[in-house]
Length: 402
Image (cartoon, rainbow, N blue to C red; front, top):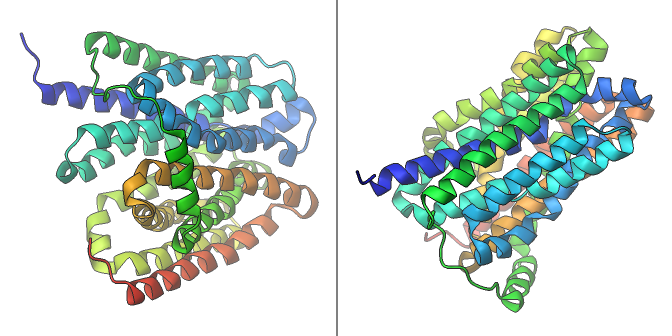
């Protein structure tokens, strides 16, 4: 019996969404583990955060590398290989005998996991018609959002039940299971939707990067997403540790509370079409930054742990309002080189996260976590408002025709 191409495509997108789930779990599972890592290795919470910042650093640095590799060897194939490779890094982290070796293996896991989501999105763009692409990407990204939620929850749950090694061993199982399914799909559908392999044009690639960075508006977008990653995730990553240390919450409950960040994101995506039509890009950026600022005001002033429930939801909702606006503009930075442009955008976002966590860890060790929350409460609305104002000025000078 012949299976319809549509059913094959849906199955492949579902598998890629599972891979995105694994990547997102890997990115956030360390957040609730910080108190236990600090206790196990007799280090400060700020030092323990290197397990997060080094993962994000590798994730950001390797974004640009995988674009040409995916073009040459096939995006679906590279997603499969890097998913299986992430199993190795996660296993090494789970078995690490020192914090130094743990950080090295987390860095290696970030380096391999970096390929999964951007190449999966590029594969979808190659195989799904434009008029169907928006809701298809939303379907795909639901795996990523669920991964963000699950990473926080699983990290806390395993920390309480089996310790931090159990949490990282859970990643091994997830990556291995998804990797095997991807391998089976490669064997079942040899073409797997990848375009014919071709050698990447190095001169053209570097030329595209130079042109993008040479454009003033592109620099605004890239600096904005760098700041967003730094100011938001530099604080967000420490919320479970804050809840555990200040209010005595179990790591399971602390991770679950921050999982509401993902629920807030899902809430926005359900009504994204309405908000885009009603508010427009400028207000989405400004209001998104405002909600993110409100998040950290609530956390700074809240005298009970339950305040994190509305705060985390606001963070997720506001983040997707602001970040999606930045994403839309990023796709227009270089219409003839969208792959390179989006790779640069993603690199800046994750490098910002790494920088933010690294800086926040130093501030926390010296001045406390509330200082970090206060900085984010001020700078995130300022960043969103500034981008909104620059976007308004740009639209006034050069109205869009697309």
